[in-house]
Image (cartoon, rainbow, N blue to C red):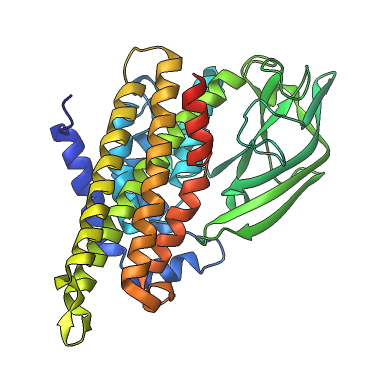
Length: 377
């Protein structure tokens, strides 16, 4: 299997690397994530100007090509720099849902706004007790004439506090875990009955719990056919899983590099700790974990770009998320332990990277969940 990148992909990688080197040092990142919105609007507009927001979309939709391999090239570099801008929630997850469900003029308008950087989105799909099961939807949607009334609660909505529009997953027919009957609605967060409770995740990124009480939306705000959104949601989430797995690989690579550098300067008994054979073995194990994680993420991305069955693609995605989850635990914990107490401080980027990969480990399902999903397919 050929894991080498194309010339265009190397150019995309180089573009991100140059941006990070010029504009995204540790202090700058900290000032951005500590701001009210938790990300930089100026950076977001620059992403649009550089064409990065077109990467998740197919050429027929006006995008760069929609390749999953193109996406992971960029996400890995985002992970290395620990970027805080909401690329995955807006462009990858919500963008994928709109590309798969919306039609005609509305689809073109929404995708254009995403790619231009003028539209921030958040997908409200998770609920308390759903345990990563996308079909487990209690939020109800009842049509009354030309309107639909939404009621329910959504949790851990990434980019929820800053979104200009919400994509809400709700059930129109069937029982709680039925595959049929799930629809997707475009919702203005300022609509009466929408209650947004904002909070910061362990990694500092902004999320929200959203309550919906007798929220009235026009029926035309339903994206796609009535009750037929689940398969598109699953495909969009699988692509988002590969994206966050690639981001984790990039962050783990930085953790490894930072740990090796620290071991060469930190002295114990007058000797750099990097000369101790026991620590050399541990860092070698960290390197192996990073390489295994990178390889399986590339494999999963290539599967998504292939013509294989949906089941084969899902198996590859779960294999990647499970393997990356194990790497996060092993590499992340070793990085903190070799750094010692300083690794836990906010003054060092290692601690922030560890928090980020910890959040990524459970996003869209942890290693245990995806191991079980892999085995069940």
